[in-house]
Length: 349
Image 1 (cartoon, rainbow, N blue to C red):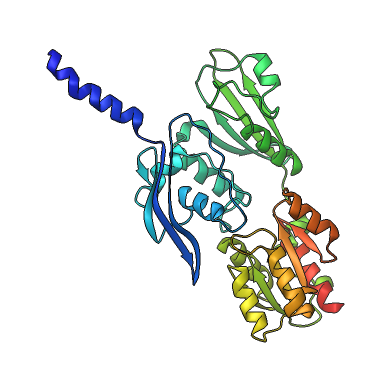
Image 2 (cartoon, rainbow, N blue to C red):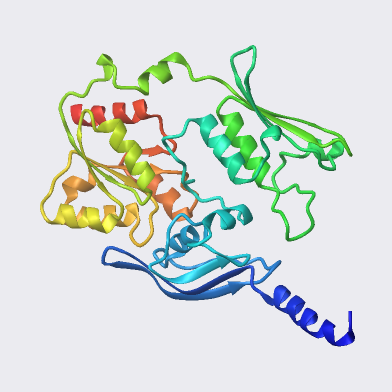
């Protein structure tokens, strides 16, 4: 290569390394008449660790949902590793690790369908995926690779929070710890086989649903039948959650949904009344706690009928609110039969 030819190459390498890993330009998003984001612009460089801070309602959740391709902006652009989140969502997802408080699951999938979808999304070859039913009736999902493998010491600490074999800035050591906690809380287990130079095999063992659970999921039994048809308002910023609740309660009750707390407030202050108000605890712009406070003044009878949905109240304000509130709450993910029983009990009371 001639000496002069190295100049454009050097410039190209410089551009490659100077290109931000995450770039947001003039991002804007509205939900109805409510602006969630207005002209948001920032960059994150390769290897940087950034805290995304701001008061409640500042637009943090909306921004992260746009970056994770779960929402599209009204205007502006966002890109990760050079891929536009709106035009190249699949390429973005392959570059992204994102753990939202409420994972946006596809509720029409079975567990195995969703696992296969995730494997396909991540480009896991079919030969490295395996699903079987063990002799004890448990479902076994197996993922294996032909990588460098792990030492016995690493395997022993694999599910320990914050343990990682990756270099600084490349891993948090939380992913497998969270997976282990979820699987064991469902009565399952994760086993690992690995040796240096021989690759790794991970197996997730999940127990089958008990007959009473699987039967209840298809419809209310006579013992839990509703005493009357109720009018239920469901407030949650996750459309899939709204869909799931509507399917679960819609055969027995009139179900009205709202994706924002302000929509629910407008309905109630305009004179509408509901037998039960199911409301997500933490939402952008106006939280379930904020809605409750407004209703205590504007419509105290409706504030008393609120039941909160929470995916885990980790913020101090949320924990304190639930501890001090006399309102009931149910944790996500909830069993549909348990939710129906709770609603029907309130209608009887």
